[in-house]
Length: 578
Image 1 (cartoon, rainbow, N blue to C red):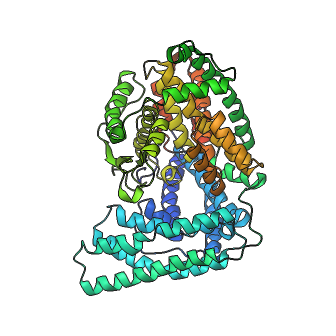
Image 2 (cartoon, rainbow, N blue to C red):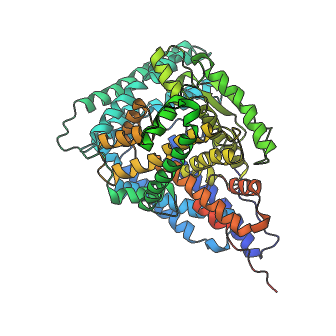
Image 3 (cartoon, rainbow, N blue to C red):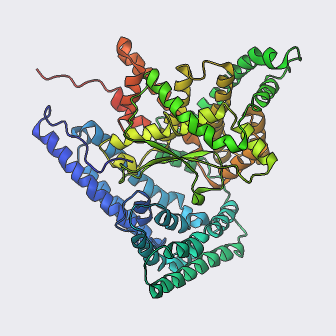
């Protein structure tokens, strides 16, 4: 989401060596990325770098050895720069690149998920990207698609050689995802060909190769179904691997266990606040009905009652469309951030290839396409059974769809993405930190409510606390499952009775935690680090503190880990030389 330019140089106030180091570092960054993309053509494509669209990475020992060689060479190159002589932006880039190289080596040498995660072998996502994103003329994209298919059979044959004692849940996921996406190659590709002037004889060759590709994918799924797997790896990552993965992926100031501990405390605090609000609201909604002695039961009844306030299924999309101008206006009126009217947010019905989950999501431009559109994708409930739609709308009720739109759009992900595109470093976009991005979106919700959004209605605040409990309980769940031994029954009970989630949502979260690790902690970890940084920055600035200035300064660093942004924002100004 960031421009392809080097960091701005503040050479006027520095000696010649500093400027020279920064200029050299910017040149080095570009060669670093060019070499990275050669080894990761899939990643390059989805980052918006299309030089290697026709290439397919084959997962095997040879390709992993190349990655290890790359990491070793780049670590050596990085070590030639004195990080202390680089400007602020380049220092952050340096640390992010170093972390990425450490992470890549750790994944290959210690994690070894290529042996136990069959779902990591799936070519379909990049093919779907090439087909559905309009970054180049359709015939050119289809030719790259065609060339890329050549090695798909070899890709899956090599995958079968790597897999040893795979995780049972990930075997099922691999089968489901590979078979679920074959239409991209078997059907959508052929449909797209018919929209072009590519000669019929050539089209036939392309369709024939697609058929071979589909067969390779289906054969892999069949192989997995028949795989003798007497000693499968447990899906739980284990404490040591989990701590390491958290360190590299989240890049937080605290350990996973320390973050877990603060999440447990946060849950207690949120429950206390929710109980206080529920007691206040009880007479308004329940009259003289006796209040349950159990505070969680009381909160649950209050949430259940408020959840009935929701839009009709046919109005779900239009309700979200109408919210955006309201959110923009509030941010401007309260002077929370400067909004860039030249980067419009396009609200659209969720595209067909993304369909399957209603609700909302953001699609921002890739790192190499900073002027691309930002889309707020809104799912449709048309065709849903009445009971399913009602359950969904109770979850995404009149209050929650406002919080959801703050999170996804204004001033959440969309606004953060616009600011990130103005940051002068592409490294921060390519290695964009998920905890910073998700943390900002969660922070933005609370910031808006603190500024008076929703007219300080206790109903809105109660629903935000419910929503915030998601982030908190995601962290508790993920850590307890992967570093501990939390059972499915214990997890479902926590999510339904302590986080007030619907049964279907809790079931879905259990599935997610059994096939992923660490990502679920990013929401709360980022939120906690940003709020802690804001408080420290407020103390540092004293009477000069302004929330808008904090927000804009924070976002100006792009999608860097909060830990690195904190170091920059709280650094003491360098002493002036006499």
